[in-house]
Image (cartoon, rainbow, N blue to C red):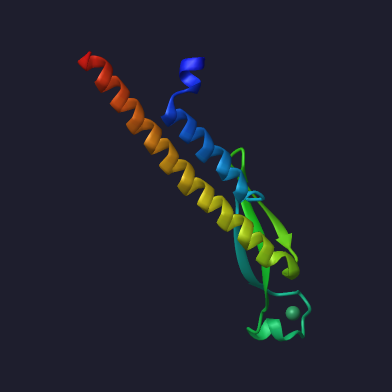
Length: 113
Ligand SMILES: [Zn+2]
């Protein structure tokens, strides 16, 4: 445990991983703007001038697509959170790639001994 804790690569990886928390809050979904008809028979939307965009958040839950209406005043906050989630994914991927490279290097060095 002490040896592991003093491993500088692992210490760096832990710091990097903890730094990812700065991206909270984040949302794993996508925001979709939709133009809709309201159903009133004489409304302008029946002549092609649809209402909107109305925003919905889409996400997957156990393989099923789910969605939720998002009030206009929440849209920019949600966009930021979704952007944060994308950043999180990108940074996590690069962290994991680095872990893999470190691991490869370790195996190679141990074989050389
Ligand atoms: Zn309408």
